[in-house]
Length: 209
Image 1: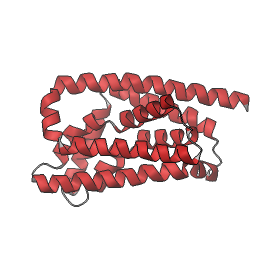
Image 2 (image 1 turned 135 degrees about the horizontal axis):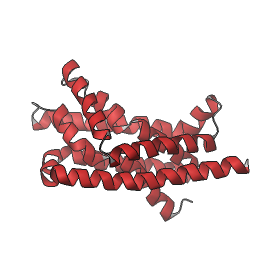
Image 3 (image 1 turned 30 degrees about the vertical axis):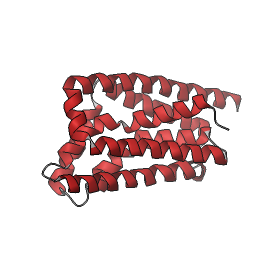
Image 4 (image 1 turned 90 degrees about the horizontal axis):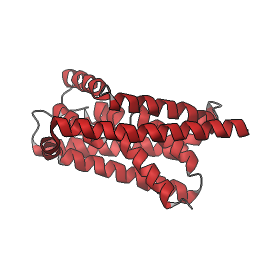
């Protein structure tokens, strides 16, 4: 059975890699010109697609790694380094710039019909960091109970993301530029620490093998 500490760490990892507060202004930019009903539809569809993508990697992550001949400890090291790079971008505010470029591309190509799938669901919700974290966490919860717990954690993270989308205008106005900057950097520091732990665990497992 997963411990309370491991479940909490998993939830924090999922939440930080998805980064719902950082997605709020991008959601507003992508849905510019839409009414509340249309925004609600886009938010719900993006959240459902994002959950499905992450759930697939949570359930079949180990099988996908085995198919390519990749061991879990090796993926822990690689995934931890990737998460550390994402944390670096968050701390120095480079991640939002990259996300905003993705949003601009989507607006010019298709303003309404496909933005829920791209770029909201992929890669903004279920991006490389969230997918890597999900696969890493699936290795930490190998039992049936663990897999169910991980799916519930992912669902909680996605529901919170949907709620942020639903309240995006209020949250963006409440936090402001300064609040978003402070929150993003704080989450980046937490993610960096978690990433180092993933790398350390992976190296330890590789040396033991």
